[in-house]
Length: 501
Image (tube, rainbow, N blue to C red):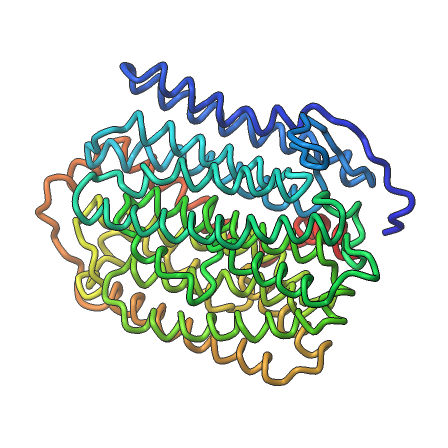
């Protein structure tokens, strides 16, 4: 792309897209006495948010960078928004999955007769609003602001059950995220502001970055690593332990945490800072890209090994998330066209496959009350559509051809070869074997033995009620996209080319 030819257009729809989820949260709260109306507002907010994101696509594809300046807090500290290909990739994925999650939540929350459903929907909608704000942030301050909003509004979701385990998980969640954001991100912003003279993201050229040629190497490196570990939602080790602890939350929250909003805000923020603050040329010159690649490679392998030891289904999926998120950072850290493409496309690919896995885990729990992997014997026959979807998503996580996960790993592997780094290629191959090591036994267990006759009255009710459709339909759709995006990746690649080329 010729960056000199880019048109910068002020576009108020940017603000509307950010406001809509928060408006849905307010309407959820107002409608707390009427559950049907409350759930309608959640679904309507999701549809309208996705629709507003899609309205921005033609302009961006035509070569425009859409911007909107909201207000100035202090000289040089602004709340402003912008949309480019990377923004649309994250915002489009998150808002579309919110539609499906809205359906799923109805079946799950009603199926288990969960308490505090109004609070749940209010916080759920607000969390997506925070993600939209982060996706469209025009500078580091705006990104930080919405990153913190996501942390605040997801705390009640993690603590939803209001028991000892829930409060402990939520406490750890806040301590990790607030400590790192205050101790790391705030100093990083100060250093960047006084070193680069601005917090605004670079216009569009991911090579250039915002630092001038006379910037102190030491201060640049310090601010970079403060950002890398300050966005702790990305789950890079050793700042990862909050994520498995947050598994005490209801499954729709786990799906929100792992696929749609929370961890994706973390890796998106890191990627945005790498490309739009530091730039690939500076990261390469200072050797920061390669160091980052080795750091996240350790996370990829270590988290996969820990996943092998987990006997609880959601816990195994949690460690899988920690590993898979680092693929995104690894791809960008390679600083090659194919590597960056593989990292960015995994934002969407991982989202569809991982939300499928958590949706399936939740459906199994609602239908059978089972959480442990050893208890899944025969569920492949008892719940055929759910386990078939789980199988498709698992193959995607492994990287089997025709799945979207294969597209990710293909580009990442090509990226390591462009870099001529055999060690990182071995990491990718080893991690795929480890992925198979912790997903295949689940599938073997599910399809072993004979069909079980479940006496759980809840399961019988679900099989003959509309609630099961609210859960199964989203599972089918997300599993379908786990295949479709592997066979037809061009729509995502078109957006990514706006960033990489």
